[in-house]
Amino acid sequence: MEKANQPGLPDIRHTVVFHAPIERVWQAVATSEGLAAWFMPNDFQPVAGHAFHLNAGPFGLAPCKVTEIDPPHRLTFQWTEDWTVTFILKEVDGKTEFTLIHSGWQADKVTPFGEPHTVVRDRMDQGWAGLIQSLGKYVEG
Image (cartoon, rainbow, N blue to C red; front, side, top):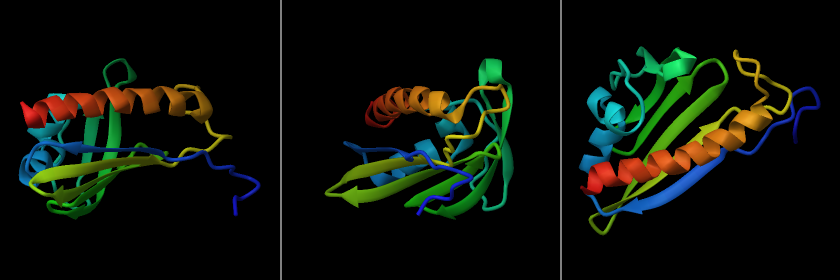
């Protein structure tokens, strides 16, 4: 049941299967170099509790923190104070099923840049779709 004071919006969720071994996909999503290749420049380290930044270009450095890491299956990090991003990897016949979940969307919240979550969520949903295509090219190439 939703709280009346904080109506939730659906999580962004994308699942794809990459024709790449799980270790290759894990290296692409759980290392600084890998994340920079398809996502954003960063100072990520695969350590629970590690505070890092994503370089979001015109939006500046976004503070993040690793909240869960279970190699090579799951990585979760807090992205700014609003969002949580989780990467889930599952080995399937030598390929990798990859699921992205971007949660924390609230209909009554705005970003530090003054944009409502309702607007930003739709933009980021489309953005993730493109980023996951880039990840696929990176791990399958």
